[in-house]
Amino acid sequence: MAKIMISGATGLLGRALLKELSKEHDTVGLGFSRAQPPILKVDLFDKKALQQVFSENTPEFFIHSAAERNPDKFDNDPESSIKLNCAVTEQIARCCEQFGCKLIFISTDYVFDGRNPPYAEDAATSPLNLYGESKARSEAMLLKDYPSAAIARIPVLYGEVNALKESAVTIIAEQLIKGVRAFDHDSLRFPTNTADIARVLRQAIEVIGKELNGVYHISAQEMMTKLEMAKTMAPALNIDSATLVAAEIDENAAPRPKDCALKDTRLCATGIEIDSRFSDAINTVLAPHLSH
Ligand SMILES: NC(=O)c1ccc[n+]([C@@H]2O[C@H](COP(=O)([O-])OP(=O)(O)OC[C@H]3O[C@@H](n4cnc5c(N)ncnc54)[C@H](OP(=O)(O)O)[C@@H]3O)[C@@H](O)[C@H]2O)c1
Image (cartoon, rainbow, N blue to C red; front, side, top):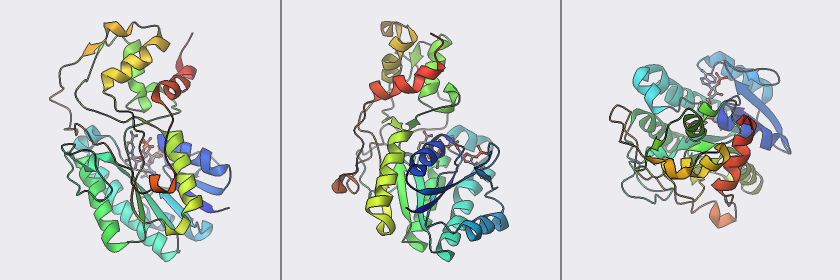
């Protein structure tokens, strides 16, 4: 049994990590505005509070999942978003070093520009937007100054949501319910279930443990556009998928990469991989939010 601390434990991925890791391990979840016991409320900008939670709990692993992850929010408030994604990550890396704790930093496929897929773990980063840049900057800092840290790059997520708008995938169902029929059919995505990411990270901790280091890719392998995701969800919403069409490209949104397929060469080699199917998992995720 390992002692594992998880930041962002009130968030989409953090909740799944806490649920999965608590089955076999001693976990401490950290949250902020949504924190309710047993999740500890810690403002990660508060260096003293961060230091205190490390010294009181002495975790062996720290999964740093807290972040600002919406590329459009970066354009509205770049300063605090960059501080959260970069300065806070560095502070956490320092605490991990001080307390002999293995850091697992959650990063994103948006560190790539999407022009040369699939990307291996050692491919050069080339972010298109500020969000991707903030994560690429933290990755570079960790690889240079904290080489024992592990970095898990993941693609767009879906999973148990409090509201459909919480994930970039389930929001498509909300849009369908509201009558939207046109969806992006240009960008290629690899929607991945948070429960699968949590299981893979649990296995990685159990099998590789403190030897984890450097970059790992964790991704489902089914490639879909938002239109294709919408067509997969439509039957559960009693919508005829034949009525769904490709949308015009939104020129006002922060630029997003076209295809960031992540090649998982490191964890796959140890037999740890994702094999669940979007069409099965998404219906389970949507079910609690459907009235019929
Ligand atoms: N969602 C995706 O599609 C996706 C795709 C690729 C990579 N990722 C990465 O995966 C990780 C998890 O993303 P997510 O979707 O779970 O994010 P999320 O749902 O937006 O959750 C963000 C978390 O960060 C916490 N947080 C924000 N500011 C904080 C502060 N000052 N102090 C302490 N905690 C703070 C939030 O706590 P409160 O809510 O309690 O304030 C929340 O738990 C992120 O690193 C993200 O970049 C996500």
